Length: 174
Image (cartoon, rainbow, N blue to C red; front, top):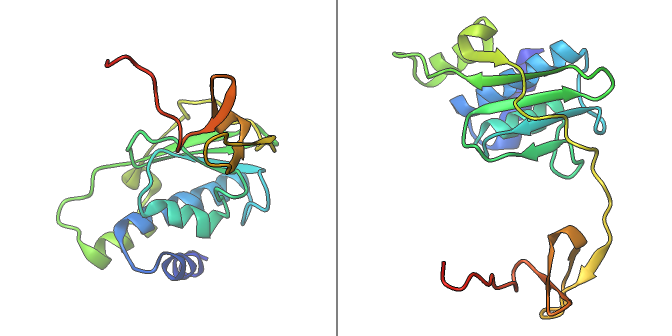
């Protein structure tokens, strides 16, 4: 099973790297703990704390995607993934441990994919709560450029909706 997930991830990502291997291994652990092969909708949610190569392993291996609303970016910059299963409330967090000295290239990838989980990741509880299911929000037209965006991404300026691209923050110089 590991090699199939790995091959799909490499095809999706475009190259072989240790970061991708970490994402694949994290996806494999979510599959194991939640007894699923792939998230069809929002039954499994991943909150990733990074926007690096590993996220492609989560997307291709587990089926969590931004478009479905079950992959959420929480930019701490840490190589950590938080997984939630909506139906059971089960959740766990994987934080990549520092790279093992002396392991490079394929040797490191093999280690990540096959070593005991606790040698690759620190395992713990998420530091955030289960995110709400994705919502369909009403869109508004920007009063400056005319483009539409969800109402929660608009600002009001003189009572009119303005998109984030057109919005100029008023901070009086500080």
